[in-house]
Image (cartoon, rainbow, N blue to C red; front, side):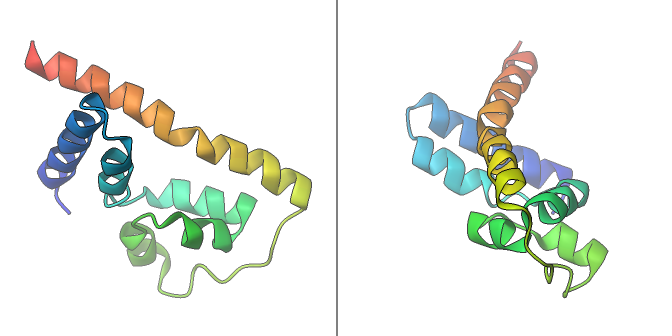
Length: 107
């Protein structure tokens, strides 16, 4: 996926969020490929099941790490719960960042 394609999806997602369609926002954002380094950290810290259940686009991570990269053991339940809270906060952080980008480009 090219940068322009990614930006177009992110821009459309932000418009949905601005219009109050949070479900549409998250649906579109999940189509953007997760950065391989982030996917690897989540896998290593929280387990592959978290990534699989998230429904996120892992195509770039699969291209970088190979098709079997999601096979991994589980984690300590306390550490996993803490990291799950952090992952749950990622969309809010992304939303704020993308809104700032849209404002910067529209000026």
